[in-house]
Image (cartoon, rainbow, N blue to C red; front, side):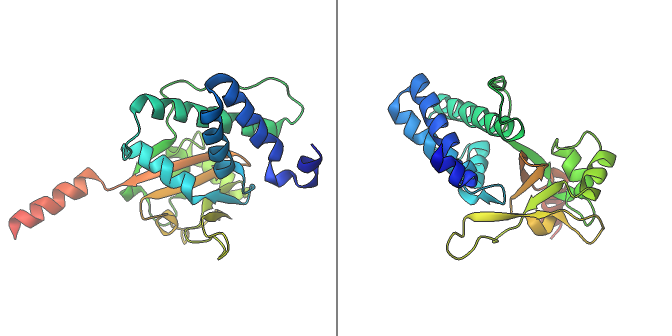
Length: 217
């Protein structure tokens, strides 16, 4: 606790707690993996987001992994549970009740069409990502400077994978397309800890149009 109090942003106590909880449930080997994942996801403070966590989430969503499906399912549940615990511990530091474990069908990643990313469309995107109950609520969230987006390639030279958050500003000049990471993902945040990774895919209509154009040529 002395280490925790010296620099709470490093979340030393949370890392140890996550490791020990997983060790009790799954053994020491899985606990080491969970601790590493927890540090990767939450160890860089509230001002950055791990590029490794983003790429791993996208790879799982696309099924681009050699891991057994059952192991992936357990790992996803553990990550969701840790994320929920981290959020609740930030909002209510004195609570002793852990949040309910997420349902099995809960996904880390939301899929959105590329056509949605237009100038001034952040309210629509935040609503579609599940971070606001409506576009008007999303607009109010933006106006109150409570909505954030990860900036691509924003990590410092000494830690390039620690991507920085930027406050989403109102206005049509702000285009979500300009914030795509690896040209396929958008990472959004509402408030301090409500984070949503969005995988951006090309619209099927556009693909059909291109195929028709190619046949025409």
